[in-house]
Amino acid sequence: MKIYEIGTGYTPIPAQMGAATEIVVEDLTRALIKNGHDVEIIDIQSSEPRNLDLPLAEVKVPSVFTKKDVSLGIMHKLKRVIYSVALARKLKKILKNAEEKVVLHFHNQYNLFFFYKLMPKQYLNKAFVAYTVHSYVWNDEWSKIETTVNKRYFQEIFCVKNADAVFVLNDITKKHFVDKLSVDKERVYSVINGVNPERYFPMSEDKIKKSLDKYGLSGKKVIFQVGSVCERKNQLFTVKSLADYLKNNRGVVYMYAGGIIDAEYKQKIDDYAKENDIEKQIMYVGELTPGQQLNEYYNMASCCVFTATHEAFSLVIIEAITAGTPVILANNLKFDFDNCYRAYNNADEFVSLVEDVVKTNDLSWFDCNGVREKFNWGNICSMYMKVFNEIH
Figure (cartoon, rainbow, N blue to C red):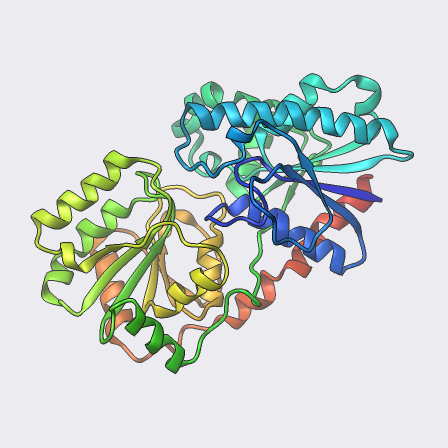
């Protein structure tokens, strides 16, 4: 069985920025190969040499679209369309020459939508189409998302209704697809995302101290948050909630990382910090490279906080846990990461949990081994392969 893992076109694999889906494609492909499966990545052309030891076929696009883009503006949308059309042409050639049915595993609504619209029927019959839904929008009550999904996610709805197998990352998404979109429940499968413990792991106390010294944080306690800088990731809530705590604890720093999606939102954070005399304790460290650099920052933190309003499945949470750092997250995210996090329901609870974790030496409740075992890519590879083998 030949499997093609299809990159989204957002940024080339391996991702040099916080691109969760690209990380999933890379790590899932590694796990598939490690378990003896015939798999290849198909991905957007890169403007820079790739450091990737995996079988890969590039989809050529105009050079202006091969550069990193985190703005999510008009050029980003145009890039998605152009890549998706070029991808469909690439897949047409693959299917035309295929001697037996192949698995095409998509991770992006644009890519799959244009594939269906542009692919001749005789070639469609040579593909088993799998689609993993990474969109965060579905993880909320239907009454709150119905208008949005019908207006902005009509492509994804089309994809979900037509794919041979649909993989979802949380139960509420599955419920919406079956109950509200009338998708056959036999075609909807629950999976999880994983973490690579070779990239994310606890560093020695000596190395952590050297890292803190390197970044001018010697003697400081660090509260760390990772995610695109925008309203959904909710960094401003974090800053506002922690303002009084930071004023009363000048040795504590709130540090956050991620691409700036909304410049006005970033400015609100800066303005609030300045107005409340905590700007020296608020550190924006930009877009960090996944792997060694990001692991260093996780390790420098006394705790990691995740205050997002919505997530489909957050890789950064299990990365932080695997790096050995306790996690505090919003209870609305409804994730189950064993004994590795504390959840809050409101701002007061949030601050209390942060204060407790930062000042205490008692982390007997924190155990990352369960996450390392449950969320390893070998387990996740088996989840996908069980479906591929049954339906292919």
